Length: 187
Ligand SMILES: C[S@@+](CC[C@H](N)C(=O)[O-])C[C@H]1O[C@@H](n2cnc3c(N)ncnc32)[C@H](O)[C@@H]1O
View: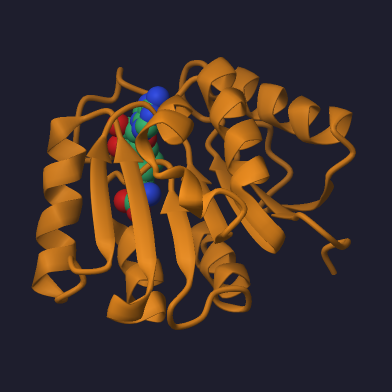
């Protein structure tokens, strides 16, 4: 099973129709579509990406599946959550997802970075509701990916957040999935 599928299985347990959620790295929109279909037009999904191409690609996918109504697409760095999303959503998110790295179909030199990702993860955690969860996939095979994964894991550990890691292999370059629950230990 791909780590993104494992992340989706986890998300599905914590997101319902009418839910409020965040995709901090929209990319081609696959995670966004997954969440948008669960929440339906009764919910709200905020999607961030710095690249116009990613926002357009996500828009196209969501439009094809009739999921634009519940979605707000934001071309901006994920560190801007607080200044972009209305404050009334603070503490209301059921799920926040981060799928780090580069846009597979785009310029591979444009990637997320550990410092910005951690800043955004910190904010997203605060914006989760008390039962909210976060999933973070970190890819370690590209330049800077291993460092980014380490920065993210150190942050999670230093904050004593309850989390579990999922790896598909013990190779140092294989991706890692972090599953975080705001309230309880992840089983
Ligand atoms: C691996 S892709 C995301 C895949 C996506 N979730 C999907 O389902 O297709 C990572 C994305 O992060 C975006 N990104 C890089 N730095 C960012 C930042 N500071 N803020 C928001 N998005 C960023 C990239 O442009 C890229 O599209």
